[in-house]
Image (cartoon, rainbow, N blue to C red; front, side, top):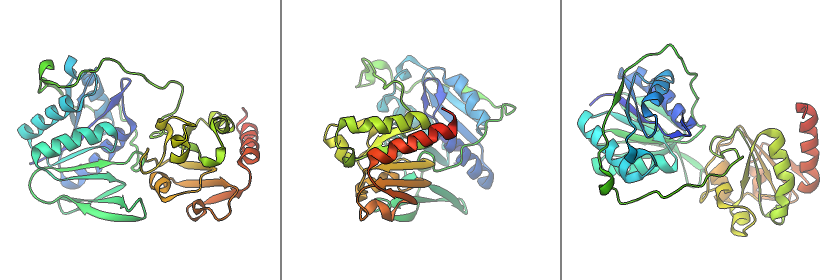
Length: 327
């Protein structure tokens, strides 16, 4: 078995940022193992994206842009990755710890009877074995984990946990096109349409997140937060309490049952900081809390904080940033 593979997700004709990070990690591991890096890309324009993956560190790429792969379906994608892995025997397969990455890697790991470690925030080599670091107990502890037994070492990485490599347009490599593993009639799911949220920054990719919790008081309480989001070019997040109350859609939820994020800056407004919320944002590089309650759990996690009324503090911050950024 040899070769490090990266299952590279694509969105809107671009390789996902977490997949770019995975390619950077793969390149680092490959240099230590003396093995090549192969990007595996399915979907529209996969061959062109294979060239992009090579620029990000892959030595070559395997692409399939068959009509059955136009829309993401775990059965179609997972069966093809399984088939290719059985035929070519990679030693390592890496993907992002996303919904798609989890579906595909879970399917393939089951089919291959291989070990899979998920949600890594670091990875090193011990001989030829990858030792990963992953948060456990809602992020309170970090565990060292590794894959044992036969089969490829399979792992998923958290978004923004690893450095994003700079693309090198001078890199060249072969892009091989392959056929899908299943015909349309053999795929049990049909995609009849999709609906995308327009005009918002993805929580997973955001460098800055402004989140509101129960303290915003209702749907209208997100208006001042949205103004700050617009000034900073940030993403808008929320706690589970606010989502459960129906104040904001679920796609904004950060926490154990929502999105796990790792921005450069996380501003928590009116969020008490329950352990379930901390599990989704405690790996943020800088955490700022704004809360009336000086005894809230969020203060144990925050690097900086303001004890006060968010409806006074947030507009003041927004105005200060406007002046500083010239907006």
